[in-house]
Length: 114
Image (cartoon, rainbow, N blue to C red; front, top):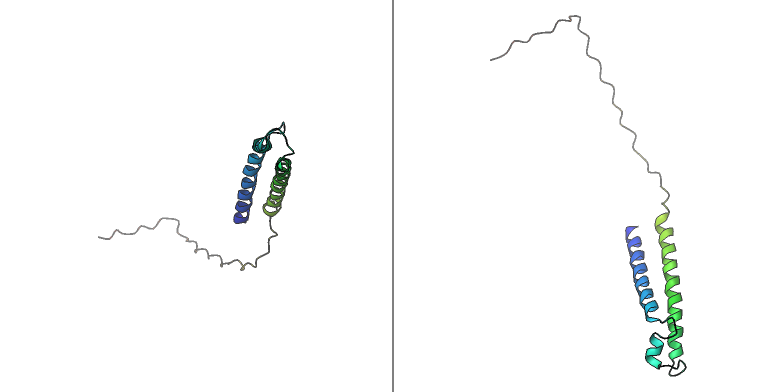
């Protein structure tokens, strides 16, 4: 169970880092990598495809992160049904018998040995 959780967390972190890189490479004004490769015109030399790739990869990575998080919640969040294990009967010992009560209430003195 721990290895599955660890694997899912590593995959989520990798996808998150890739998503940050893809988003940082984009320019909100339409520049980003597309302006680097194609200059001002976005229709030359397939630069429009760079914008499409960046947008599709952003949506794909976001979806992958959400799916991985949901899988990790389902896999690790639900406790497994406990299968009752047959237990050995408890060891019962007979209670110890009481020592016979002495009728003499005076303490018994024992001689010291040398």
